[in-house]
Image (cartoon, rainbow, N blue to C red):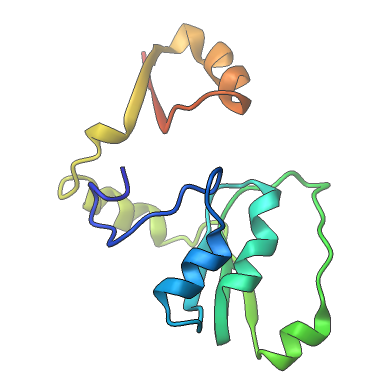
Length: 137
């Protein structure tokens, strides 16, 4: 799906070493900015290893409120890394709505459920392979 939306290359985190592939594609440097949007806490530590010196790491995933992971402060200092998170800026939603008419998002919808079945669809999300579920009234 990422390739279809214009990615130059992709990594399957279940079968490939993201750090090794990322370093290979950046000549060993890492990335200026790394976004983690999955919401899986297991992906968070990888963002630090994927960032280049003086890089910025953005945690945009919605993590469980009790989720934690260890971090090496010296590594952060020595590599001058910045970590930030994002929830929702007040201007993001209107801008996102304007983009909808310009993007072909239909390929991302992998399941359509009636509103009456939304609880079942949400309960299955931990094991689902769906990208996006569209809920219709």
